[in-house]
Amino acid sequence: MKNWADALRKFNEGKPHKSPAENDREADIEFLKLLEEEKQLEEEKNPTYKNIPRFFYKKPNNEQSLYYRVRQEARTRFLQNKTAEVLDKEDLEQLWYLLKEHISLPEDNTERINYDQFVYVSSLLPPKCRQFFTSSTFLKFERDEYGRIEIVPFFHYVVRKVNLFQTRIQISLYDSSGYGYLKEKDLENYIFELMPTFPQLQNLQETFYPFYVITAVRKFFFFLDPKRTGKILIKDMLTSPILAELYELRQESLNMDDALQNWFSVQSSLRVYDQYLKLDQDKNGMLKKYELANYSKGLTKIFIDRIFEEYQTFEGEMDYKTFLDFVLAMENKKSPQALQYFWRVLDVFHKNAIDTFVINMFFRAVIQKLETRVQTDYKVDDLKDELWDMAKPQLPYCITLQDLINCGVGDIIVSMLTDAKAFYEYDQRETGETEDFED
Image 1 (cartoon, helix red, strand yellow):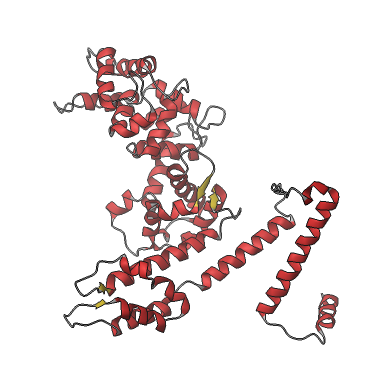
Image 2 (tube, helix red, strand yellow):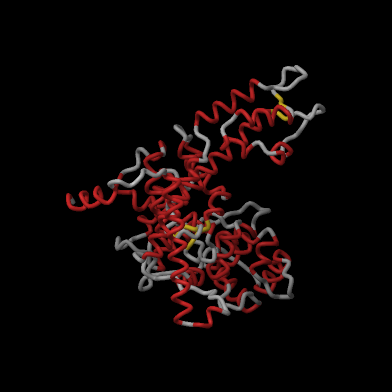
């Protein structure tokens, strides 16, 4: 280490001191020289490059390569520069003070500002604040007869934009690929490091941390990656209510009802995990078909079989991560993502449509399960007719996923085809009769 230090000191002796900007400029010049040299070498190897420029560059697979390391360093510096553009607490306080000091006439006990004062306040603030003082931003707000806007809504707008910008930068730091999306491992790292900042998670036992992270990550991927690409666009995360739901854990207090409805709360995550443990009768950490069937006694055998056929299992057993997707689908049946989840189950022959034969297959299983509980005289043909009326398919006697989404009752149709209990309750909705399938 000492030899390196001596060599570096000797190298810098007598050299004039340079500012960071000058060093960056010198680095850019050297980098452009290297690019030009590389271009000349390529032209020497293949003369056709002189006439037809190269337009495809294969990305190196090795993450330790110079390509990835330079890209990572460039992205880190870019995010650092963007962080410097974010307004801090002092900037926001100064902005609020100047807005209050330059309220426009006439005096009518309102806090409003006209465009001239709006521009003048902008000139008094640091340059990084001026991005919020554009004419287009001013026109977004309702104006009174004097052309003034209220300063409180404008200030709240600035605060929300600043928070969004900070969140975007914070999430981008976990984007290992640098292409604007998070893979599952990236999101796990983000949530794991975010957990200590949430007051609502202070009582969470450390041994449960891995299961909590998996539980949290699955909701993001279930709703924001329904096609199962293995990645989520950061811009989709920022505009999704799921991120806002996660950030509710920043509150110091959360009543029990809100906590149970929030997927990310301690109470909710423990509820789902406890449910998984109770279903796991043989205590091997995985769920077999008969164990998952106990989630709701009305679920038909063909439905459970199709779940295991379509979704990832390990030697015929379901792990906790796959179970979480199942729970999210069952608890959010009205959502397009849940309907897409169930569609894979219903579309037995992968024809992107279900016809009379498939509907017969699922309805018969429902009727057979009902016949063991109550006296029924259901006829499949009558049930199919009602289903066509509910689905309003674009093609005759052929239901598509889009039909399920567009009809507005796709969740009811799915329940009728897969759950005998739900079907019976729907059929008896006018009489109010119910049947206990849990005994």
